[in-house]
Image (cartoon, rainbow, N blue to C red; front, side):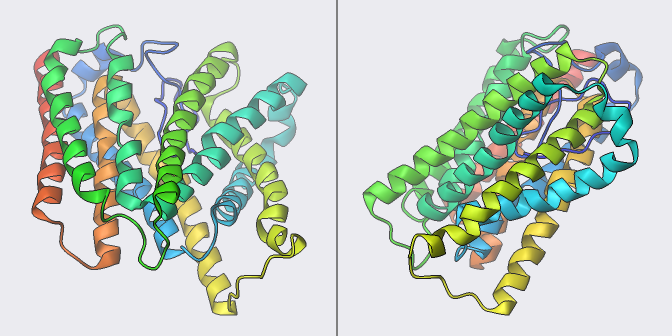
Length: 356
């Protein structure tokens, strides 16, 4: 995961596919509920920014499809090399000012967060997409809203669990409906789809979900212990740490097959240009711009509603998959997407009633 935060934002919310943000409900109470009530149209603006973030985050499920002839290690290392370079560009002008407060213990924590939330997460996600299919992997990651909603209900001033049970059930219905269809249709054309391969792919998708969950909790606790370091600086430092780890990962990722004596995969110059262009654009759009939208949403909305908005990452991930395959969704897929969006809108209505 990657992230971009505004420097004065101290109460952001953890992002799923790309975030280094504070998670209310784990160590804090989240955005000021009174401020939410005072700002006219805050819910509308928050929903708009959340949807925009989901649209950009959904791209991460499309990249393994469009670059399926490259392995997960190559995709992950290339993406975070680019992100690390961008983060270093932000940090370098204030490097001495920032790093004088960072000791060995802090760097170790930043490296651990980088592995969990960025490299391991995206390797698991990519393997899931390439081996089990885009739709099943997208849906497993789509369980994030349920987890965030359950955690967020403990926050001060949040909507209770009872009014959210029906919207959550509708979201789960959507996930279940697509799962019934996609488990038999999600593997990439031309890729072997043995039972064992698909099972490993699904386990990797679950591993991506667990990595993100562990990252968000660990990152929240780290930020709580170091209030003197702004979330923006922490984000950029994790980006630098991730870039350094990606540089180490790049050696076995790109040279490992040759050193092991395996037959090299033949890629033309155009293939490599396409590879770096797509992964570079992904690093900027999903890791920086997407989180910029999410940070705005996190200042305007409570965690329970943010958890529901993350479902748009799933919706857009599915939509991009349909566009890539150049087909319309089936009736069951339409039903699932309507259920997911309906659950989010229902949740938004519950929050409007709570703050009216």
